[in-house]
Length: 171
Image (cartoon, rainbow, N blue to C red; front, side, top):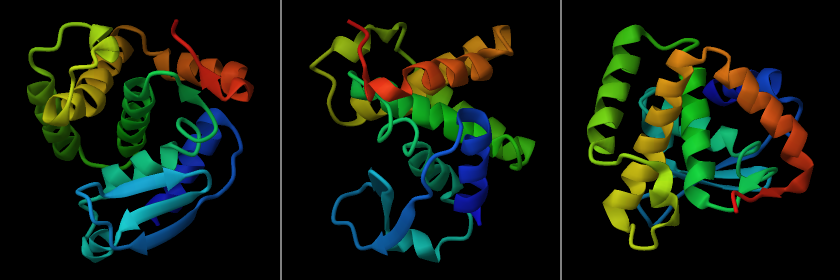
């Protein structure tokens, strides 16, 4: 259910794209999912959960647009945009408390980051890299959206104009 509605949200925002095949498999690492072209692998433990993984599922679905079809040359941006889009999707149906708690946790995780220069920092590893990708970038975009309510539409237009390049460089 979540995968279908997330796919529809992204289709409305970003345009038509293939519907992914979703497969639940045991993954040996701590990641909940991986996206490869139009196939999304989810850790089989997610199948047993009751909606707690909606963010992860919607994040992986967004990779059909940002990640497979269109990629920044800096992976943190691709992950950060996918996380931001997943949170924007969740705003359409999750209650306010869930979203408030999610953002509080992301703000906490992003503490200490002050700019996007971490994208170029090769020393980011482990939890620091994770927090930069999945907390700082989405929080920065969320804050920008507060001052520019049209941000989501601007990002959608940016995507539509550049999606045929497959890889977009900041350099």
